[in-house]
Length: 436
Image (cartoon, rainbow, N blue to C red; front, side, top):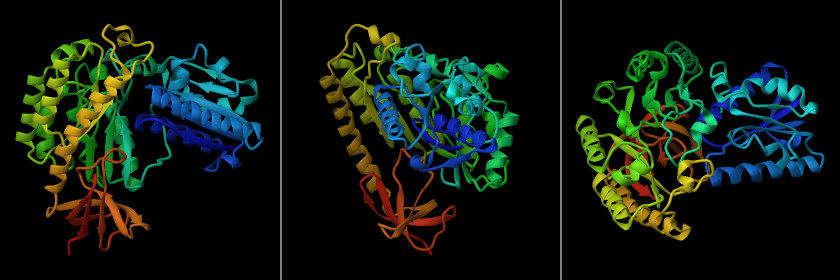
């Protein structure tokens, strides 16, 4: 059969999609990119927050319209959305022929080959097979590498533990083996991901083994950059920072989801820490790595966030001066403890507070962008932009998909590292030219 895949959501979900593509292809089916050419469309969904659920439902309805027109025969919906609503989703989305939960991605071939029986597969999330080959769909020179799945943090606003299950790490040996395969395929930048990357290994080895994993990964020939996402601030150790400071392959990019600065709000979020502790950590990071890029995410308008709490958050953003910052108004998600908290703010107020944080950060980001003019950076070329008539890529300071890019003139090939002098800025992007 001809099988088409649509992957939605985060990079962790993307890897599940890539694993399914490999299994389906290995079973002898043909992978097609055009929905009109597919017998079956497999949609791997996100169900984390309202906007992700809306995107998933809209995509399913688009495919349902093609099915009604006779252009495709069947629809399979996988991942977080069916996992979160497994008790009712089959009745509500009757246009869909099969549902596959988070714990059953490995059953995708059996599901599509028995599609006429309208299969429902919902093994516990912890039974998900995290190993096996995948078809990398990102740029050839960059690949995400999932080192763990699930989450034990149980933040009061978050549905992920109930969707993805308990935290579970892959072994160092299996991760290194996959990294070597990626390097042999041309990967030069590895991006390590998990729901909480800093917790890696604690379930397998009784303590975090992230530093030991990094020791093994930096020895792999062909890998030049190793980037880590989702480093939780309370678990960033001196040992990790010292390793990053002394190992050239471990780029000085720290993405740590903070969510808030005020201890009273963090406590209601079921998160540790305080403004004082966070600022001390940021100071320590910059002392050890003066060129470190710091990125975070914040939630504005959490239930019970007083005006004083919000003013404290604003002051924190001004003090911390993050290089990258994303802020979201609080989403009230059913099934999470904070859904029933007292002190719920009106949507307009939450959006207004998020906009204020954005304005503060915009001024900081503009100053930091302007300070880049005249600097020389090592850039990983990702391709040629025909519209702009120049190359584009990223330095260590830009993570794919979430940060800006560097557009530059001069000779360069995709997958090649070049030295670029920055000559100008354009919103969140940089402009430059290859230094001869």
